[in-house]
Image (cartoon, rainbow, N blue to C red; front, side):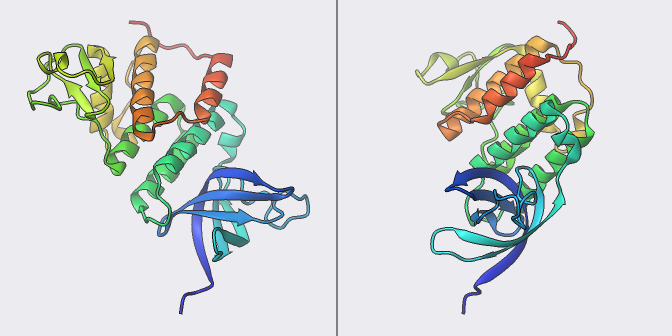
Amino acid sequence: MRLRTYKSQGLVLRQYTLGEADRILSILTPNMGKVRVVAKSVRRPQSKLRGHLDLTNIVEFSASYGRNLDIVTEAQVRDDHPRIRSDLSLLSQAVYVCELADSFAEERSPSRDLYLLTTVTLDLLSDSSEAWLVSRWFEVRLLDVSGFMPELEVCVECGTELKPDDHMLDLASGGALCPECRVLGTGSRVHISERAMRVLRHFQRSLRFGDVGTPNISQRVRNEVEGIHTRYIRSILERNLKSEEFVRRVAEAGPPRYATD
């Protein structure tokens, strides 16, 4: 007989307003994948769930199975990432990371690798002084665990090793093209400068964030790398992420200084 309730640890990825006091939550769990649940009356000041199910929180929760959506019955926050919540720039990156994880996660499809990657990334944002590097590393590792890592070492069409030079990323094929193959076809493509290619390959080879190190990347190349990731991810999801605008506005409010070319 199927159990009527379950308990799990989870990371709150998304939240939507429902009615006057409820919320629908998207929670990533280590053993069940992504689950969508309703937190009833969570927006009321006296709710016992209030404060425990906020975005980016890691929680221990109990829920009862529902016909369409499960219903949260208990929740206890385990980590609310206080440093992230006190820094708007870090918060914008954390919201982006959570929305990206939510977009790639499948409901009721266990992916412990995705859960660990996302929770580790939030810990890195809390501890690192380089949120940009953390977010770009997360994007690459997310593409890896999801099976969408772009091919950047050899031509995605003919398999020829790509020499140091500017290249084109074919979005539909999921990889870079050699000079001979780039003249073929009419699909959507993104230019990759030689310097950006070195950075992209470095991220791909960095299985742990510690492997990234402290590379000296100019603002121009940072913008190019971020733009390439954005275009490629959009081509996979076939939509924009709402948090992209939040990240952009926060960054424009206080742009940091980086090395120049």
